[in-house]
Length: 139
Image 1 (spheres, rainbow, N blue to C red):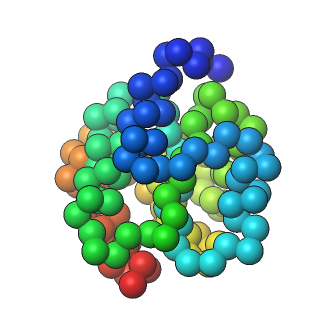
Image 2: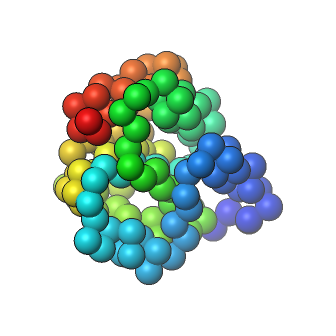
């Protein structure tokens, strides 16, 4: 577990952009209960690729699209462990990956960006990937 004071700026990076945090198992299950519409879920992380590519790419995609997901939420790997584990159950069959980004439609996983698709990529590349998914699923 990472100390909360270490991760506050990393949490704020997304929450100040309007992303809702899910910190408990109940939060995650409640979010998916009777899920309708589209939802983007971010598995946040303290790693460099989260700071350098994932979070900036996600914010860029959300600011550039006319087809935003209905909801955008996040759990924090290594901090909110139980919530993250529960969120990952909804992302099966993909193995645990942080950071990662999942797009759901009516509660069904329709697009997934794993860590190995984030590492070594620019924020614009991440945004372009998400913009394509938004155009396909969020109209």
